Length: 122
RNA sequence: CGAGUCGGCCGGGCGGCCGCGUCGGCAGCCCACGGGCUGCCGCCGAGGAAAGUCCGGACUCCGCAGGGCAGGGUGGUUGUCAACGGCAACCCGGGGCGACCCGCGGGACAGUGCCACAGAGAACAGACCGCCCCGCGCAUCCAGCGCGGGGUAAGGGUGAAACGGUGGUGUAAGAGACCACCAGCACCCCGGGUGACCGGGGUGGCUCGGUAAACCCCACCCGGAGCAAGGUCAAGAGGCCGCACGGCGCGAGCCGGGCGGCUGCGCAGGCGUUCGAGGGCGGCCCGUCCGAGCCUGCGGGUAGACCGCAAGAGUCUGCCGGCGACGGCAGGCCGAGAUGGAUGGUCGCCGAACGGACCGCCGCGAGGCGCCCGGGAACAGGAUCCGGCUUACAGGCCGACUCGUCCG
Image 1 (cartoon, protein in one colour):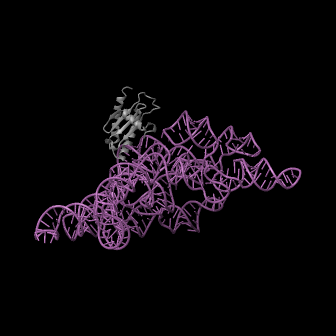
Image 2: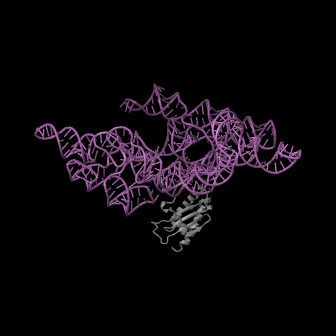
Image 3: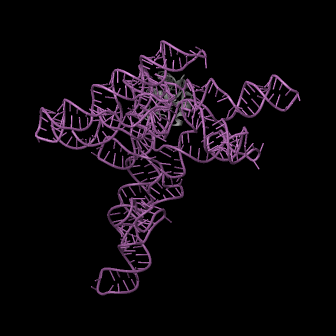
């Protein structure tokens, strides 16, 4: 479970991260990351994350299980993100019956790629 | 030691004999070769609530031209869950010294309705007693008494509730009429919190009842029916209609089987066939499509086999995240499947609560311990499967915490 302060909750926060953030695709998920132009104070603005698991992934039992797995995987990786950034992880249909270890690998490589592209200048 | 609060667990055990259900094996008998019957052996075989059927889901079928209107549910916040009216934490209000408990906990300046009895008066309140002023009369030394007119919500009394509370100013007596503090309401600002909300400050007018498990308004959610769902295979007997075919006949037609559709039977009554019964489109209206049968009562029937049907939102252990509900990862484990509805009976041993005279020990004593005897288990049982809630229950065990007292 993510603490309340590290969660994306409002609709516009999701759309801005998906529309304006950097996007990297992996077989089972897509990573969107939006880093603010001016880096704020890390204490005031921790990195925040949200999940998108659509009907295409499966029925509601499957969708909730995928969301719970991603949520647990996201927790320790959040600290590595720049302050104030917004992360959205979107699950693809192949994520439905992937174990946590495979999802973790996809998430790691996706995060590395998206940080390499955005983090080049800061 | 006493009084209490919260949570969890168990709910007879072992063995013998007789018996029951599914499945498997073996043997015998029957056979229309699909199988059936009987006997023996073996494995497995009800619950914490299997219950009430009150919620929520899975699963299955139906529906998914259009427009409008109804209907049902939920109700602090944030989480959790497949979902919920469940659960957790927190907030607010109330109760308790406390552990903790209780709350169907949105809105009553959107509107409407209802507030019994008592009481003078109960929702743009209300002068019964009382208090005060004026006039008249009586009395007249004073105090006063009666009648009439007026003022007054401070006091009495009624009530669940009487239009803010306390103190003062004021006045004929009084009143937020005015003032201070307090309570409450509305609005604004600052700070904290994801949020319900909390803390602080200011301004205002002086106060403006309850009931929404009354209608209603607001926000959010919700297609219908249910395992007798539904599917496959048999049986499709009988009746009616349509289509093509074969045979017979000069012909109208008759006979025969085939395919497709509808229909369970008899009697009685009612409505209806373009002046449209009835049905489909979740309910209603409009609309739209199909359209000749439909409805009610009485009588008498029928409901084969298999699948669905059991390994899934399952459970246990460890580690990790979280205050917690719960979740992630790894490993282990796995339970009946009836349909005439299977778990029972009996015997032996053990057996808690509880009851009891003698005896023994301890104690001044009430009594305690031991021995012995008696005593012997509540509520209740699957039927598609899960998650909850609620209700029933002889009794027992364990843990955490609170308060009081005593000792150290």
